Structures are given as structure tokens and as C-alpha cells.
Image (cartoon, rainbow, N blue to C red; front, top):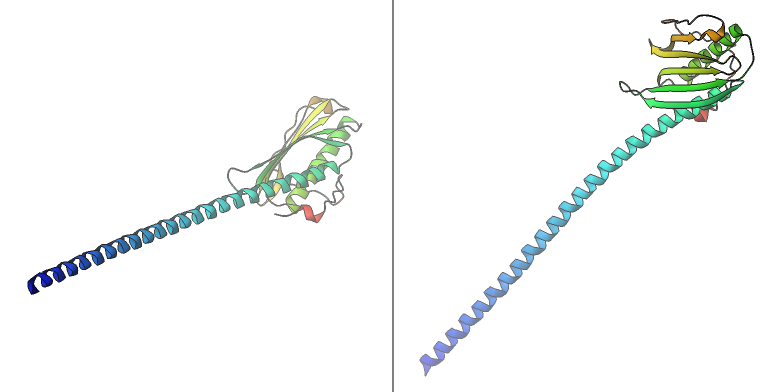
Amino acid sequence: MKKTLLLILICVLLLSFNSCGKSDNENTGKDNLTESTDSATKKNDTTTDSSLAADSSVSSDLLTTSSSEKNVEVFTKRLINAADGTKIDSLTVTKSSTSDNYNIYAIISWNRKHTPSDSQQIIKDYSDSFASSVDSKLGNVENLSIVWLVSKLNGTASITYEKTDGMLSLKEETYDKKFGIGSEETTGSALQASTDAAVNTTVPESVVSN
């Protein structure tokens, strides 16, 4: 009888031990699963934060570039429109491929009636004044190219300025035969716009920001 009771007791103990071991294994498995899930969540959060930061940086750079380019365009438009008899047919602002500066290409119609020689001098004075103002107020323009369409003469002129030694300098100017002379070219002369230039350009300071 004692042996039978002892055997039963041993069986009960063994069953109890097996039950405890199974419970511990289940708890351990659940803990490991929880830790793995938390780790994966943190990793995903970190990756997402990095991606958002990168996207934000790119967006910021694009916004800065777009804002600067727009600023150059707005300033140049107001500058040209302030001149007597001018109308902008086309204005293009592009980022330089070799620096952080900008290139401006403008096509301007001018409808005032003057002699061919006077017309040539006036649009040259206008161009010099534009280049001087762009250079002093903005300072981030590398090339300024202006095509003039003079309706009263049915003539065309082209004047180009390029940044040389830190300032916009006259690179080339050409006038067709409607101005009463043969085609001319001038290169390498520095821009010297006088204070009494033909254009009286007053542009709000709020428009100017490098």
C-alpha cells in the first residue's frame, strides 16, 4: 500500500514539473516574440525618420534654388519695365552650370521713334544701366544677354555682358544695318554705367535678396 501511494505521489510530482516547464517555455517564447516585434518597429521608425530627413533636405534645397531664381526674374522684370517704351517679349533665368550664379536672357521690344544713331545710343545706355543695376543689387548674375527689337526702325540689336574680374562687363554688341551702320562688335571693355544713365531704376529693396 505504501509503495502504491509513493508511486502515485511521484507521478503527480512529475506531471507538475512538466506543466511548469511548458508554461515557462510559452512565456519565454512570447517574450522573445515581443522583443523581436519591438526591435523591428524601432528599426522601421529609424529608417522612416532618415528618409523623411533626406526628403526634407532635398525639398529645402529645391525651394532655395527656386526662390533665388524667381527673385532674379522679378527684379529683372521690374528693372526693364521701368525703362521708357520697353516691353518684355521673353525673359529666361537659368542656373549656371559652373557656379551658383544665374544667366539672364531677355528679348525686349522698344517702340520709341528716334534717328538710327540715337536709337543705338539709347538702347546701349539702357543695357548698360540694366547690367549695372543687376550686378550691384543682385550680384549673382554671371551672364546677361539682351536682344532688342526696335519696331520704329524694324531693326535688331544684341548686347551681351559677362562677369569678368567680379563684375559684369560688356562682352559683345551687334546692330543690324537698320541702325545706319554696318554690323559692329565690341568685346572686352568693362561696364562703366554713369549715374545719369538713361534708365532711372528704382526697385524696392524687398525684391533684392541674394
